Length: 174
Image (cartoon, rainbow, N blue to C red; front, side):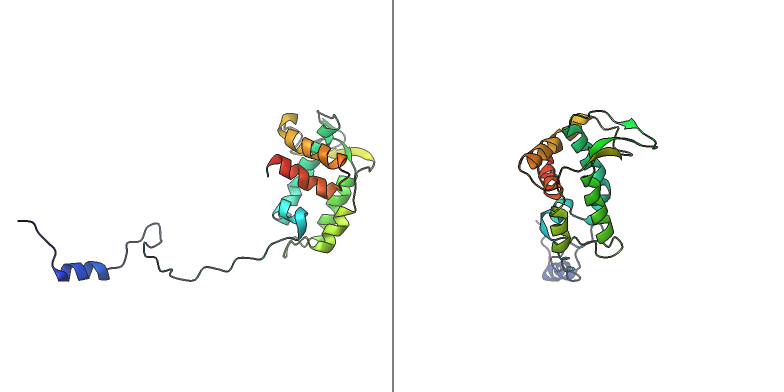
């Protein structure tokens, strides 16, 4: 004869709390409300391409390396520095200085519309100078081919360095 649970057994099971898995609960009711979503960190395409201003710190070296490769400089070398580097457009570092100076790295890390307008005013065509690419120079040139294609496209379209950075990120799939 099959054993069937009594109504008391069924009610006891229904009243029992759901077992916790990895510190969570199987029940659908949240134990506390979800935190509010933070506002977007940046205005404009440059900010969206970087995601966070902290991403800029390494971005400029990779972008400079891609620009070096785009002009035919496949190899890096040491020149009075601990890190290897190559010859790049000096305006890349003008953009770097602007962002480092204006972004509050310890605070909200915002690139606002005014900063983006100033960044868009910095174009290609600065003097070519040696740039230290410490920690970047050892990567082979073929890793940068999508970014190089983006830089070629940005220069051909007459885009600013900041807009070319966005295009190169799009070509890179990042």
